[in-house]
Amino acid sequence: MICPHCSKNLLQRERTKRRCSFCRKEFALDPKLDGLGLHDVRIRKVTEKLSDQGRLTVTDGQLAYALQHRGRPPQQFRGDKNKATGLLLPGLIGLLFSLAVLDSGFGPLVLLVALLLIGLSIRQFALVGVPAPDTSVHSRWTEDAFRTTVLDRWRTTYGALPPGLVDGRLVPPGPPPAAPALALLCPDRTITAFLRANGYAERHRALLVHDLREVPAGLPLVVLHDASPQGHLLAADARAARPGLRVLDAGLSVRTVLVDQTKYTLLRDLYRPEELYVRLQRAVPELTGSQRAWFAEGWWTPLAALAPKRLLAIADRAAERIIAPPSPRAPAARRTGPVRSPAVGRPENPLETRRRALAVGFMSWPEPEADGAPGGAGGARPDGPDLGKGPA
Image 1 (cartoon, one colour):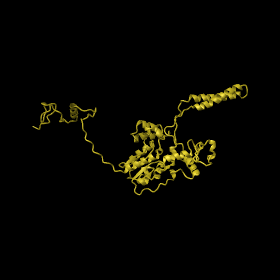
Image 2 (cartoon, rainbow, N blue to C red; image 1 turned 30 degrees about the vertical axis):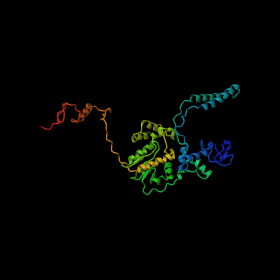
Image 3 (cartoon, rainbow, N blue to C red; image 1 turned 90 degrees about the vertical axis):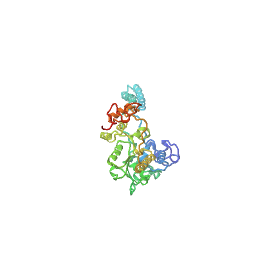
Image 4 (cartoon, helix red, strand yellow; image 1 turned 135 degrees about the vertical axis):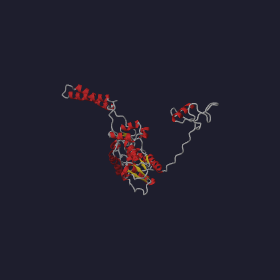
């Protein structure tokens, strides 16, 4: 790892007790002790990128998601070549040794152990291409574990968190706006803490709530949610509970994630209740088959894993849209051109036009006339009643 103080590349033996052997200064994180990829230089770079070079304030939850693997995790297999080789070599050595000492008292025991190692090695080789069973995919750290591993260690070493990073639990909720213009509903407290820390509530006179029951009556509502069954159901419930009021679903949709899954943090929950999917199909019928199948496999994407700059822009645009007066609809443009047949979508000939008119009862539908043909003004139609004449 790189020393955050003197920039020396340190081997494990050169950074014992979290201290650089060159500059003798202490650092907070060691990738060997605290997890792969966790070290002070990386935390500073990631925080700087998340905060848009210090223009935004981000929370510890957003930092934890930024350190998570993007896209689907690598495919796991039941067998491993490295393990197979590691078992085969000592097995062969033990086999040769057992043959040399077979007459001794412990020779058969060595032979048995050697054969067992060789058998396990063969099994590993045989299972190299066999996929492992599906497993859940969770965040690398729980909230408490991340705070203990990163935030507390960092405060102990440096006295304060990196610039632009705050503990989401310590962001003050602030007083609600005196005359709120809108309500924003989001169950994820990481996101509401981020919005509060960046002045969203004051800028838009927004009331931030975490439960649909907390939304005051009469206010237009913005819903932010994960790309998950629960998130899509939250938006559907909000629309159903507020008929006649403006409800804007600004959450992360599964449609957006499926465009390119490699750009998003994908987590997996294999233990959702079956009734959740039944309710999802009934309440959100616009989901396609592939989108429902993705949810049925257990996948979901947290909204808090989006880049903070993008997340704030989404929330800002949603607030502007929800309070903007509805634009008057432009009058429909008059249709020009030939009459189109509703059945086949091509220009109708006169016979088709007349046949359709007869079917709906318009017996006096106008038709083109040739010179000298019967049925002029006031004349009788050859294939219908005389509608041009008055009563006798």
